[in-house]
Figure 1 (tube, rainbow, N blue to C red):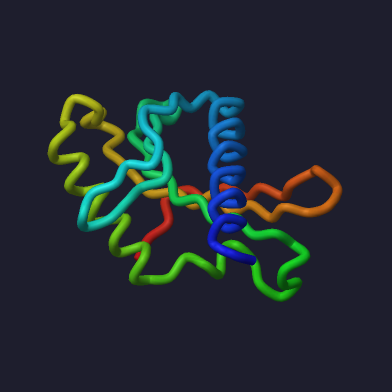
Figure 2 (figure 1 turned 135 degrees about the vertical axis):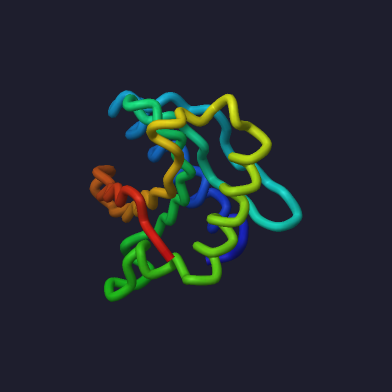
Length: 127
């Protein structure tokens, strides 16, 4: 799989993740937030007003049956997401509900040949 295929797979995964979030009453605030120190795939508000930073990992099932998209989230990547989320939160205090705060979620997507992707949403993942 070349980098163009990986980009298309990643874009499709993020589109599917946004669709899933919207269907579950999330409001998308921003996509592909990038800074020199890190990036966040999706920034959204949960229906309970929690600010959520979402990392999306997507894999084609046919590439490796033993590997799951969840396996692609390394501790160092999660640390970068947490740092970026913290800096974003500090600069955007108005988006944070003081009672709910913010959290980091993972949406893991396995694409298969049946056009019925497997989507798993893990809330409040920690280092």
